[in-house]
Image 1 (tube, rainbow, N blue to C red):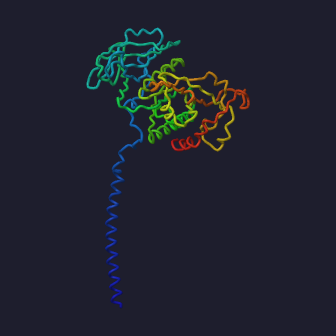
Image 2 (cartoon, rainbow, N blue to C red):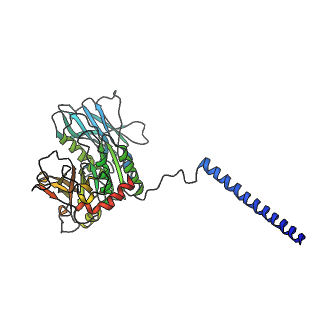
Image 3 (cartoon, rainbow, N blue to C red):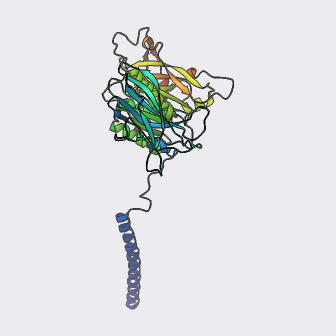
Length: 410
């Protein structure tokens, strides 16, 4: 009996040794693999996260900025190719937004174009068109006509003397003809003054992304860090594309000139969008019936050109809506449901359509969407119970989705 017991113990010991050696071999191999990964990283760690949306176009990688050519000439460095009437070619002329002091003689201004593969720039033909004259500056469009219409330059230079240092202004690449068109491009205007606008900008991005806006252009002197986080997260996880255009124009430019130049720049960047609109950071497009702006625009036949949309002023002086008392987030659209009829009267903005209606039946877009503006009205002589107060809870239908988007992307 003892003999069998000893034999069983020997067999157990042998099997244990075999399993131990097998386990140790596997462990050593796994340990070596983990060391390699720790030192060199995983095979895919050098790849950028893939967005579920469309890839950025080459033009999205060029950010314009204000640049001084001379003390009395400033240009906005986002140059664009533009077609000439009756002429073909990919890029017959380059256009640049500019400001020059009133009375400045531009007859001696010249331009050259920079092309890949060419050591020296090639001479172009300079011209300009006045857009709006102010007390100090004249807003204008500078143009440089090229002889080589089939090629797209990467830069342009304006100068008055060949001995001067030549600053190169980047030219926005031409978008491929098969590029995907967006339903709407939203251009957010610069803030009215200095101060923290992060809550309004975050609300603008989140709400408009929620209702289907896929392209944004932000004209800002500086971007709050929380807004950078929001737009980074939204672009990473959706098809939304956001361009930031640093906006610090020369002092003493009038508000109307600033609006004119921004509208021209927004229009240039809206070539891949069926519609575009300029809004303040405090303004939101509000669908009155549906909940998706892309679907509304797709189902609405609208004539090409501008459409006036009414703007309603939701004043922060009114009390917050009790229905949103459990929402503890800085989202005015979910708290302000009282607007002032008197301040909203005759207030509107333009919604621009780049494509014509497909049928003879043209729908009034103003019946489908409106614009809500949120913020202080600097008035304390009204109440939510008087005749000037209007009550609208359309925005509250988005409460659950807005809160979810805010928690996800900010």
